[in-house]
Length: 505
Image (tube, rainbow, N blue to C red; front, side):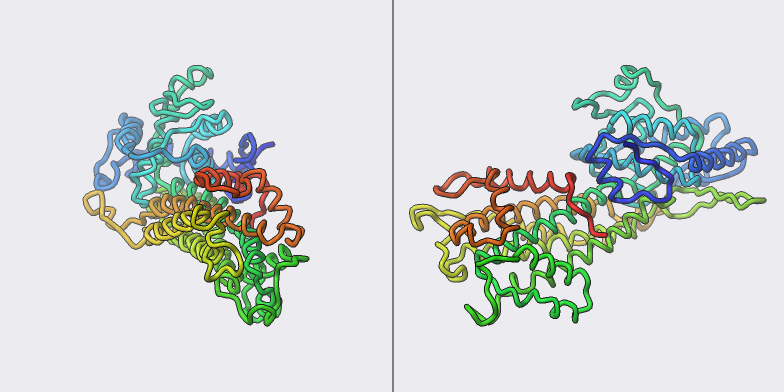
């Protein structure tokens, strides 16, 4: 299988499929024509000794400093070396791989002025899964993700570290072993590699892929809880949600009814009580609102994945060629979307923790044992699992603070407003991990509660989930270190995101 890159129509589903396989990328011929055309423009600029930012001038505050013709290639090398100052834990290899795919895709639009040699080097790295080691911290999210993308570029020129076949090696060593030379940067190419939003966008794409999946997983977990608490199904009736004019809410309600079909544990209003608490009754409204967020985020990410966010940009206007310095590298549109994603994700954990509390609290859980303990008093059961969930939810409230409302001027105030979008993307993944762990906790507890209520009374679909997950987490017949159960379920949920769960259309 191959992923054909055109610069125009790359989707998140393409990326998810690519990550779930050992696919290679190919470049469309039309895209290569655009690359060649824009490169000729750069070569004319060099030949005519024109003053163009980043090609014949310095960068940032040094934009008015002209560079001698014979030093223009050195300018690009110095740019990469000096800007490769990221710190902290590296991005996950999947993020770095996607970063390369996205950077390549934007170059194929034909507005960056790069050589085919650079395109070929990126294709080689991607197809051989030579993954640059890219520190996760150090980007302001404007002027591009300068520090992270410089570490990507360092690997291409044989001066950075890479992950290859499970080992961390110097890129020159890997290239030599494969009979491949390092890339020699030409005019404009260093700038073309690092002026973009690919770090925040790549991490954002990973966040979205895993977020949308965990949102679907949350529905069957909530359906288990609903049954263990003899929840009322009337609140999920189509009529309620149709009149709200919210397709995402309606979709959640219909999927919940599908999960609950045939259950002997659900009730109707007035049988046990008239109304459920909001954490059960309002699942369609709460989860549906998160799906709305995800739809917005998907739209903005896919737009950015296929955008020209280099600087300067080259435009072929027929009789005239324009080279324009602009600001498409500014990450504000992506930063807003990724901050929004954090909020949508956090709420899935917020309401899950409230369902957990109802499962373990003897004042709220009907006739279930306190904390689902096998021997209340002697054994604590699920008591501290609820503590852990509460802690994660509280941490998410801090992480959900929008990074995009902050800005610190840089480059001697030439770059005086930045997006902090890469911080939003990193915090978003921390939130995602916390959400998955909270839902794993709900899953562990709901499985136990459903077992106490009677597995044979579950709906057929949730019974199948019960049996699937009982292979991962055994019955709680005695206190044990529950952190192992939580991790096993969380890891299994994460695996599902890349192995066949659907994305919102």
